[in-house]
Length: 85
Image (cartoon, rainbow, N blue to C red):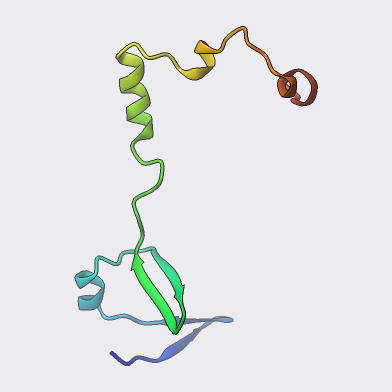
């Protein structure tokens, strides 16, 4: 496919047609990977922490305590001398 690089303010952009976006699952955000002879554009991977909130809730409901409660009463040098509460 051949396309032009267009000016967008002080930046530049590439316009991709709708069918190409749909075919490769490209949405509002993408990842751009520099390659030796160009750029590779891929769909944005799922948010790294997506679903963590529900997993924590499920773990607590199953009886697993959050780390702060398990370590209650333990202290360390950083918390005593450096951290400002």
